[in-house]
Picture (spheres, rainbow, N blue to C red):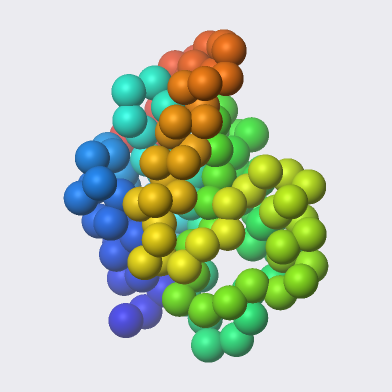
Length: 131
């Protein structure tokens, strides 16, 4: 599997969990490899197919993508593990770090948290289209 196939795999995991999800194009994704939406809740996912440890740069990229896309949550999904600095950055930004096997659970956690947050969906449709 190559990195783009892995992005497609992560999008498929979310589709199978009831999300409208797709892998983004290579350029202009602003750090989002997958964008998924369920109702008015939008999330972004950075997908890292690694043999080593995923660092905090992935967290920074997906956090920026979350802001750019007007998403209510962000996830870094990997087949590997995360560095201590990635865990610290995720804790500070609210980004969820997960193995792809737990991606649908992480997405559901973000979904239900966003539903509990007042005004979580305000402006969700005022951002760039991702179709």
